[in-house]
Image (cartoon, rainbow, N blue to C red; front, side, top):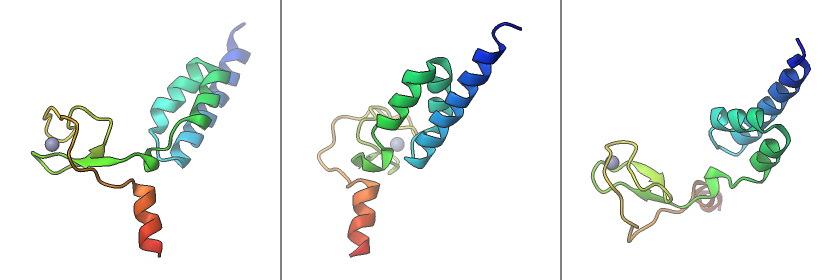
Length: 100
Ligand SMILES: [Zn+2]
């Protein structure tokens, strides 16, 4: 069982990456995998990754689902998406405005 200590350390880094990602609203499972496979750098990347709450959003013209601006394919109906004419403000900005 030579690789076991490494595996345990990698698991902790994976959990750390998942917790950081979840606190930012990013997919925890993906960041768990990244921080587990590339322990130190993966956790650092999770800490410095952009928060999904800061991303501009757009509405799918076919089904109306609200998606991140970076998506080129609708996850709701599979429509190919061009760069939109109209954007929706990020979730964080929306919260800031409604707090006023
Ligand atoms: Zn759609």
